[in-house]
Length: 297
Image 1 (cartoon, rainbow, N blue to C red):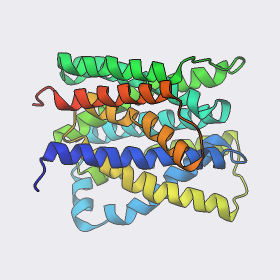
Image 2: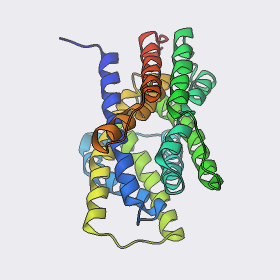
Image 3: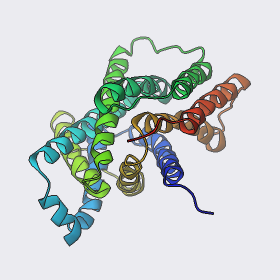
């Protein structure tokens, strides 16, 4: 059975978010004795080194040489926003806050992205897609109710909210770069990731120092780098050639659903009826936004 390009992009995006969902468990384990920024920097620097041999192949190297100054400025901005700020903020947030609180705050991205998308990409969601966004947010509210933000952890909350804004902007910029189709997704991933990794690792080493890494640390870093980063981010950039910023953001936020299910299956965490209802509402919201999407120019 032949599937459409759009459907394939949706399936690939869901695969990526599943891999990213598994990252949260590994990150929380690593953060028990690794400094957040340095940990993030090591992950993305290792992923960049994995991608580098592919980028140096003649066809990709030739495309790199054809990139204009504007192209490099866009990739520089994407690297700083998507990796240095967004991922750095999430790593720091997970060091200060419970994963469930970070996940709750990150759901705000799904409301911010379409607003930016209208002004910066001229991508106008349909009424059904706005309904999907509203339903997703209602589902998230039901899932997290009663949402109690930890007292005395204001620093973590502010850092994550900065990450939410950076994540929304990087979603818009990533969509803009990939929608044009001028730069291969592999080059978009490697160039932006290399820039972001340099900022993260350099800043982390300066502020937090370089930790002693055990075999377990390296196993976590290598898995996150090769599978959940080098492969997943390249595939994600490819889906951004097809999916609108809103569609991608909603699929990204299904990590809320996937993390809850993974915790139930592998960690034995319970899912009470209200939480199941919340996940069902959020899933329906994502389906609505994908089913009745706006035409993409």
